[in-house]
Length: 340
Image (tube, rainbow, N blue to C red; front, side, top):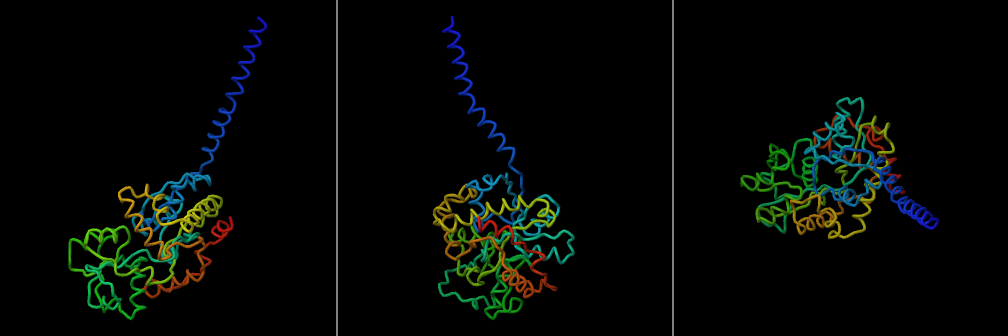
């Protein structure tokens, strides 16, 4: 009897000890899940151009930092900015010119840029025929499908034209009436335009279909420009500094990844974000951006870059009064992420 009692007692102890780690693990798991903070990011477009962001998502860097990230595509800087100002999104990802426009319109709670992702334009000039010896002066007298007036793609295009001695208003016709994302279809269905300015994957798809050929990279032609950045309302930044730091830390890990891996490896990681595009095409696009040094090594939005942005805005006639760098750029979080 004593033996039976002893065996029963021992069995109970063993069961209790065996169950303990699982119970502790479950508690830890629940605790970890509870710590995840929900953050909504509204991106201007869903493009391979933003590969480091998707690496950070697919590699779980945001979750590592305790963030439960919801990604929403705004389809235009104006819509993304509206989402941020209204509070529908916590963070916006778009051209920094949107924050300048909002500030000029008298925003009482300015949208401040805290991290810069891309340092070159991400679009390409596509012609109807192969032009291995293309020169920018070839655009004179031609019709080009361009971007929205006041948007970064169009302003950089005009900036390049002026750098090459071409007057955007007099020397060619730029059609700005077509919605973002619809220019490739318009180029295919209507042959009145000799050229179109396209983001990826549209540029590569046009080439694959034999409907167009990339003849120039706007990113290479324009040089380094602060094309896209992350921003949030000053009030949100003040109330949630830890969230902004964690978000920036996760992004920096994505930046580090693309700096230290091949286009093939990057393409493999981000492929789930672009299920409608085959891996071969994704890899070709990543390589195109990789080769032109599209992504910064760090997320620090430098003063020189901000002033260049305002030069471009002024040149395009979209800026009347310049804004102080300190009013619309905060580098503290990017600097810390870089050190980490």
